[in-house]
Image 1 (cartoon, rainbow, N blue to C red):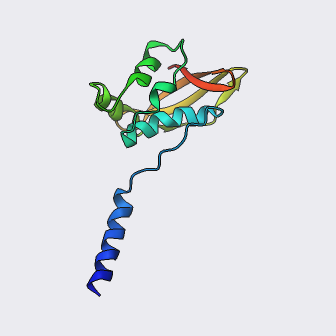
Image 2 (image 1 turned 90 degrees about the vertical axis):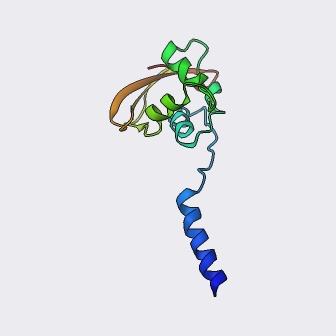
Length: 127
């Protein structure tokens, strides 16, 4: 009986602290690309960030893509993007997409990210 109680208690705890499942970036979907930024900030797994930016990304976007979990900028990145989320549907015109999003310490600051499509794949360009 004790074993069953212990197993039930451990299962309940595991649900509360379960690691998020690492999503694959779907570069054909601009929402997935920007969503990967928020996921990296929440999970601490920054391995996908380096591949999210366009070669011509502005300084702000390039800084996001350069963040690593061990870097000096990680805590500021986490503070600003861990509560990030999309705020509406993308506005796509040709090879450009504008995505409104919320971010910041409280997740209430508003911003727009511009993505560019190169060879069928979306990349962060500016915000």
